[in-house]
Image (cartoon, rainbow, N blue to C red; front, side, top):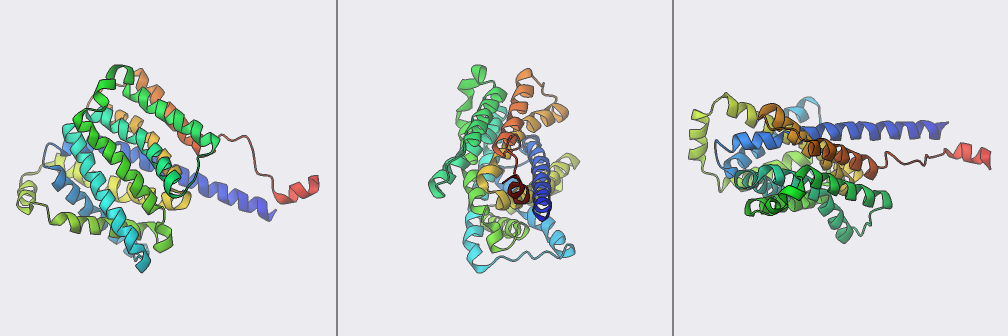
Length: 315
């Protein structure tokens, strides 16, 4: 009976993590639309700096009123600095790709290739071989991305010069995910995210033109403020912290597979806010991406755990 309750509790926790991650990925999907809008106001460098400043400012009251410690153990600072470097590189590549590349194809490319990069890194570093269902899920996820890209028509655009930035973004995010998967060993995900973004902001501050930022603040309209606050607070602070938390719980490889959900959300928000059309390949690709996440995370496994008490009775 006790084991049955424990199993039920674990399943409930897994389902909550699943829901939290799906919501976060849907939030991430909107970031592509925000980036397109913000890119018309200022440079990728300035936008990256603003993002890194907004994240700790958002997390600080959460840790204070929630009485959550945002400290990191001494041994964890190596991981914090490493994560800061890679999240900084990711943000720069992300904005640069949106500014200079074919954003639609590139955005899907990032979210399709990232989980595959994560599994390859896990293979070389942790020597973890994917299970059969994970191989199947990765293949379906890749097919989902290619379907969303409509690769049979747009194949020549995938590797345009600007989209190289998206490939680099996918790789450095996979590395950052692997580093952050150890966050719980040195504190908690919120504290890890808090200090990671502070270190990134400090590092980037040496290259930012603050006169440009002051001028931007004096001329920016409500459209800019709405997008930058959403991008920095909801998307970067809240959704990214949830991603780091779940990553520390389930590992970088499985956590990265949830990114397969992002493309369909990105296309949907582009339709809602920019007026881009939704095509049949968007619906099919989005459905395949979500299916890939469920398969990789074992949600369609036919085998059920049998409590030891029942096994003993059967014996």
